[in-house]
Image (cartoon, rainbow, N blue to C red; front, side, top):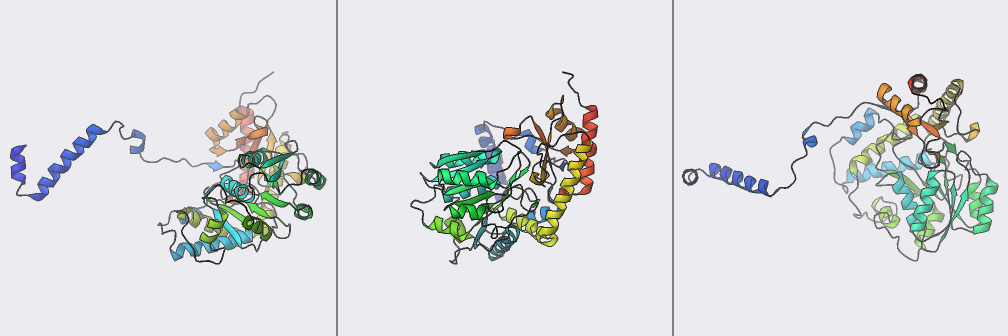
Length: 417
């Protein structure tokens, strides 16, 4: 070693290589965890048709947008993309609200952002619960120290205006939370008149549209919705990670009247409004945004704009009708009995008697490369959930899933009890 070192003294490159080898050997002796063998293999992702409640398959155009080279989150080109996203959300929501943006997170993040910004400790919120998303909203509101009252309907049912009015009169809430597209049960909640009803009693209307945006009509301004949010991974066919949200002027005034700051800095709508250029002030750094998720969301909104909202609503309605009729023709029972109350994007069908839902979903995955899902929350073990959203909402996919289900019912084990 000494001889080698002496020889290397006249060759700096060789000397540097020897030092590097020695340092790596010393570092290796200090490591107690070896490189994971699985990470030394190439990434393998199978091709599947995602006909569950989300996420949906991502079209090539949106995948390509997400694969673009990164830019800085304060670069003018990125700020321009954010402005285009705002315009796309305003179109999708049918609103002129200035405070419109996308949360850096999933639809769950948008739910939390809405509640964190609207509610302070001791505020009263009325939560309409007919599935898991009302349950989640009530949980979040309680964590914020709000007084939470629950308005309950069985899974598969929706709320009539008189149900809502009774709760408003009894509890006098600051906020009413309701789910437009209840993906755990397949129910589409009518929104007509609810905003006017809430405002009559001095209440703000907060609507979850994660499962319904682009698949069922929403008119935020006309329906007097105060806060509306959605997700990116369903009809917009964008990877999860950016969630549209919008606040009316009434809701914005509530934010300005807060006695305390929102408990989450990350979800503080005042900070986010500035970063998204909603307050007319020079934009300031708030967080390192998921730039490539924004590129994807921009393209998802662009595709919706190109197709047109009315065409998108009609396509989802027609394919849902075709699917429901096909399921009935197979002798299966739809979970949501009233046709007008069926969510066009996610259809729930009762698990056929004698079958285990896990056997059916596993068969479709293994034999057909297709995902459908079981129930969630109050529908666990009771239903199968079939999603037809965005580019996946086609007549051809309806035929594919009906054929796969017929195959599953023939070949899956059925209990004789």
